[in-house]
Image 1 (cartoon, rainbow, N blue to C red):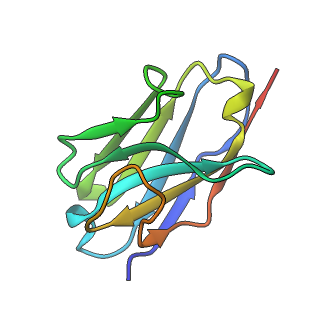
Image 2 (cartoon, rainbow, N blue to C red):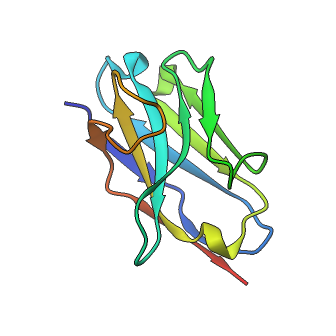
Length: 122
């Protein structure tokens, strides 16, 4: 199975930036599509961004488009989420996910990390 570990979360002021990282284990990482999801307290988990195995295709939720950028470095088995112009409504636990197939934007990915907390103060 794929093991995913997120890092890079923290506390930032409105308008600030953070970069999340997700490190995956195994030589099969390059074959997986990767996604970022988030879940705020009392809210459902929602799609944030996704990227194809090659990095040639990316997808973003409307709420983050133009502010967040997903990327991957397959040589390092790592996917990133660069978050700029952060807003209080971005506050959530952010989860990295991986799968070999299926929709890029749904929540049915096969493998999930444990999450990293992002808090944006107003």
